[in-house]
Amino acid sequence: MNDVYAINVAKSQFRDGFNTGDPNLVLSVFAPTFTDMSDGRPSRYGADAGIKLRADLANLFAAYDAKINIIIIAIRVQQDMAVDHGWHELTLTPKGGGEAIYRRTRYLEVWTRQTTGEWRISFYMDNTDLPDTV
Image 1 (cartoon, rainbow, N blue to C red):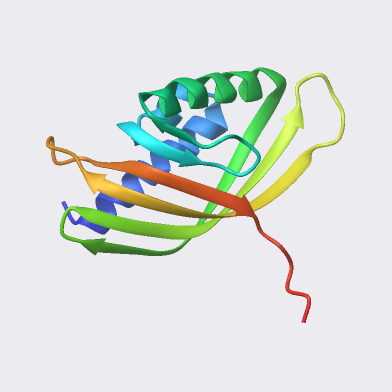
Image 2: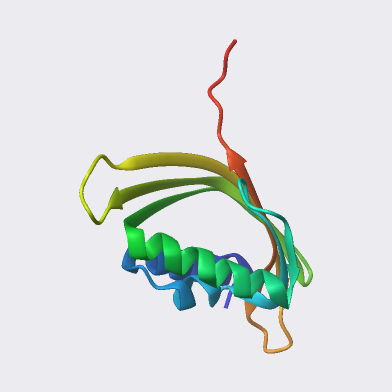
């Protein structure tokens, strides 16, 4: 399978995990140990990153119905490493009622080919996308 296509398939799993409220499906695209530098949360490293991300996602999905739209700018593959960047548009609708929350973040992911041949995220970073003021 083409490497860019394989990463796109994995990104679809990431999207489907958010859109169905399934933390395990979201985490299935991450390497067993990874670095998480998500906006608004402490940086996390190694096996702890997955444990904490799973808990954060479980809490998020318990309170909100989540819908994510992924806009990929580019995926660049260099041997067993790839860089993916773009935007995540996340809409969170409170399960108890109320106004939906819209968040648009810009993201950067470093993907590594695992010994199984599968691509997994080994480094994740995002932050709030700001409007151009010029």
